[in-house]
Length: 224
Image (cartoon, rainbow, N blue to C red; front, side):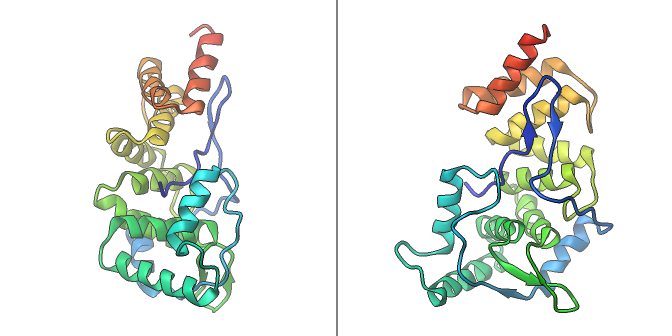
């Protein structure tokens, strides 16, 4: 699954937290998407450690999509990356989402308009997530929802985050279900509704999501 790590901290009061420094942008989702066309990319060696918070399974899954099994040389990695870019530009939502993850984590390198190499590029990531999300791709919807919730690559918009989480959650996306539950619980971007929050936590917990189960336990401990 090419999804960013869940960015919800589980406490009695649930909060949204970023997995890096926040970089709010004045650009709309449309401009973020159009920025994809002007990208300058280069792929070097792929680090073994991805963004903080990714599970070992998610790290292995992402690396597998970038490098062919057993191949570690840069030339092969760059060839694999070029194919991924071609697939993404051709409209493949899985490839688009994968590129979004790479630009968000810094696995793929981009440059600013002045030529400065960026350690990661949340605006470009959001642009690729936007393309895939428009096609109904659940991972991308959940990822873009996190970008809106944290104001990374796009202007912070909790209502838009809720809508994206809902679309992904309705497709069974477990992290989106937990995130949507948190939004209902806190009342951010939507009218507060503990009953609906619990319903979404229960859906996610039923799929084995530990964060959702912890959220349910926290609500129970608080006497809700």
